[in-house]
Image 1 (cartoon, rainbow, N blue to C red):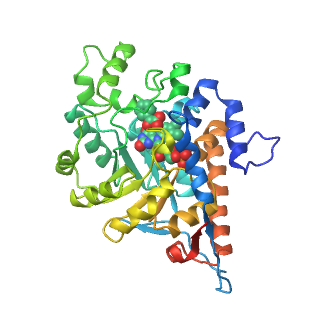
Image 2: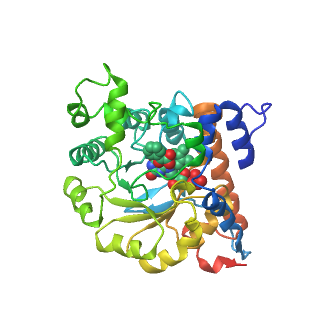
Length: 370
Ligand SMILES: Cc1cc2nc3c(=O)[nH]c(=O)nc-3n(C[C@H](O)[C@H](O)[C@H](O)COP(=O)(O)O)c2cc1C
Ligand SMILES: O=C(O)C(=O)c1ccccc1
């Protein structure tokens, strides 16, 4: 990466170099949180409250970072979080991320609001595991069409983001008047969709601005409620995973309504400011639903020890977010690969120096809250 040819390790350096390559508006869109950014800060702070108590002399010479999830084995202990509008970070956007994910065999959760279509991204991924993150549109027929297309393109789970009935109050983006959907970076899946196209008077190729205005009207579905989950269940055989669970009662509801998994997440501090950090939410949720459905985790994962702590507190998998996006901004596919390579090495070293050989050995006996 362009750091006087030195590799970049520190998260703050990733952030700094991404800032140097992106416009002020785009960097701010990626980096910032909502409101006063208290939750954004808390996501990282929360990890500092937990300390690892390693136990040694366990023969850690042979290590295995793979995890089992929904009857599949994944080679890496993390997946790439769904991040929209990646064409704003780099011209190759999600295609570059897909190529890097394939190279490093890291599962990729592709966002609905991607700059390239889910089919184009799937083509780059080959047989790399992929899930599709769904922003449930208020146009139900369009929602069903997106789910069908994802299933056909080889995505093996549908991740329904539930924390975004509408977009959070993001003061930085409001100040900059920067909205990546309006800037045209999140419309590929809609413009490629037969249902969405049928709603337009003129095709997006003829009148892009008016197609984007139509898209802005239907992208979210604030009316959505628990009983609606039956609708996509009817349209797909794929596992359905709810992303954005913070309250243990919602975790219980997820089980009751037949979800196949949940992701404990506060959307990287980008939705409601003042919600609890994702790590603070994790233990109580695990207590309620552990063993019933897998509990995944994101928001604040920056380094190997963070991964160790999340698994120790009961996560079944973790998602990496902003770090890989900064890699993309800095150097496209190669930049993402470098971030993934370092992150994998960090997790491996962290596992060994915690006295463990496998991710599945991590449990609450390994950590203490101080
Ligand atoms: C720029 C950006 C765009 C995002 N877009 C989406 C999205 O399209 N869908 C979604 O479910 N989550 C989205 N997220 C949230 C991530 O999936 C994830 O929850 C978050 O990045 C975790 O926080 P962290 O990156 O600080 O660890 C986005 C996050 C960022 C930073
Ligand atoms: O930026 C985000 O976090 C995000 O998820 C999003 C989704 C759609 C439109 C704008 C932002």
